[in-house]
Amino acid sequence: MLEVYIPVLLFVLVAVAVAVGILMFTSLIKSSKYNKVKLQPYECGIEPDTDARGRYSIRYYLIGMLFVIFDVETVFMFPWAVIMDELLLFGLIEMLVFLFILVIGYVYAWRKGALEWV
Image (tube, rainbow, N blue to C red):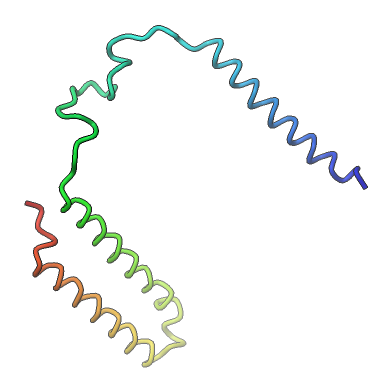
């Protein structure tokens, strides 16, 4: 009965041994010398202009949420396109209603100024 668990036990032991071995190896070869560049928040060569904990405008999040909402809603069109020949006129009407609601939401967001970047 316990013979069936031997491969699982060996796999776990090898995984733990590899993880511990890699950690030990990297601790031996790591560089412990810090310099001014290593202590900066960014190592890309560009000096940071502001604090990393600065605030973003609420418009940034609004544009992001609108993108996610419209993107996820349009993903629903793929299954419809796959079985379009089975749905016939009913499927076409349902997709037109769906697109109409989507366009109404887009026009509403546009008129409220949610898509303005400035």
